[in-house]
Image (cartoon, rainbow, N blue to C red; front, side):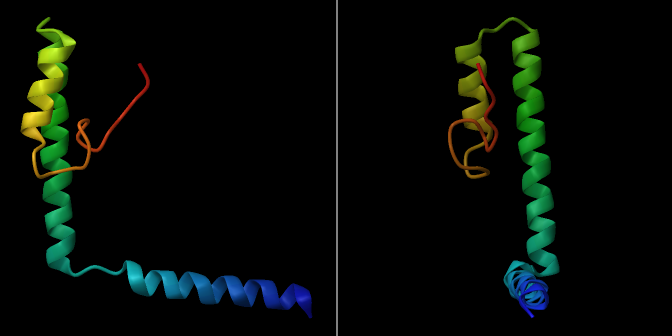
Length: 81
């Protein structure tokens, strides 16, 4: 009996979570645009670094390009340094 209850509970939780995770087409399109804008900002940061402008200058440019797009000073992406 216990073995049957666990899958049933998991299925109920997953379906409840899916109901909360659904977004409208408009929200999905806005999210796609935000991701593309963040990707462009990160590409700009990569080109800045390639040009030898220095990490501080490139981080500042990234922060400016990402205003209103993502949380934090790394435009929604952080990696180890």
